Image (cartoon, rainbow, N blue to C red; front, side, top):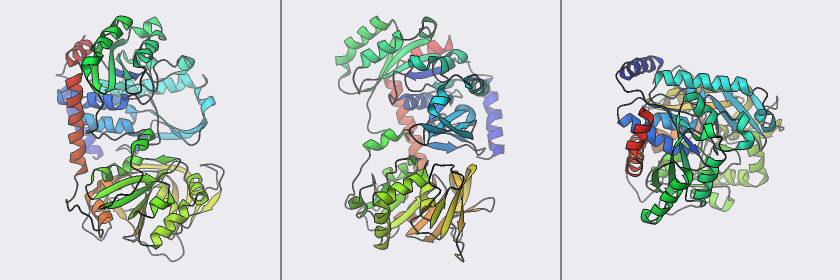
Length: 513
């Protein structure tokens, strides 16, 4: 979507809002991390869209390595991009004004309003100094968003009751109080202890904060709901707050996830009868959603591994993005995976890299300004005739491009998020993977068994996916997979599930009054 299209959408949105009942903002806060806040927020974005409203997501501060580029070429957390897609609106930095991208156990790159402002030690970042300025920024972003959309669907972060961080919190109740949002507390029953986590979370809140909690939502329920009915009554009596829904654990709805915790549930071994595609499991792996489409393609079996024996069984090896590319490449060399990749390629496997993985495929990586860490330079895999130098400038942009410029595959889309300049060595000929609309080129296509690109989301394009699977014998002959249509179908399925198991009448009565 170009700038003109976005302006037209905005005009129509304003016109529509003039005739729509104004709803209170609603926040989904959690008893802890990974309770399903992001997915529930996405569901409500789609529900409000289906019901004729113009919703938009908001999370003041996000911590994730999975990010996305907005149409303006700025960076936000992937979860808010997914929620915006569910809402049917273009993503914008106002939806996630503050993004933390961990670089180690103690430091993160801080992205404010879509642009990096430097690396911060966790202790220094969470001290009170400078928090007022950040608070003004995230509140201003929310105010701009609330003026354009109805309702705003807010997402909290981690636990709502981290009392040691109460004075520096930018995401949970301070933001709910600023927005005047009705808060739904989400608890995960699958991990156990839901009564204690819900009750304890509420009791740790101050009275004026507790007043904002309008409902409790129990997520990831397994089994017969009738066995939990007495528990619902007990919880309501204990807390004095209604349980507005019990959402079942599902396995047949696929929504892109932001947190790399999701990788633990993915396959780790090759499988017979399909194109076996192995994603290298890096310590600082970022944007693993680049490969989600492969999980849905019936021709493909996708697995994540750093086991050299499993790599030997792969038809295709994918090198993903990394937040610490030199450090991850050093580890691949140390643990023998780098040698296994080179050996597998020599024996006929396809090797493809995206972003940091593409940088690793060259002859050399350099970080002369120590932007990533303490490794000034390291040899690459030597599969592509190029060298990459890490630089301060961060490239973030959405792009329309032609895949393999000489072909007819001209209607492809993707986005870039990277730091580094890659140049060809010696007299290596230019053989780009993509030619962008503005004339720039991207990536290097040595041949159909060895190529790389900076373009995230490149595999979401059917032409690219077909190229990757070409030449392999599989038991499945199904044609091109339409990933965009598939995602829309999943948002609708998610919305239907939540509608069925949540008291939507109560929700609407709450946010209309």
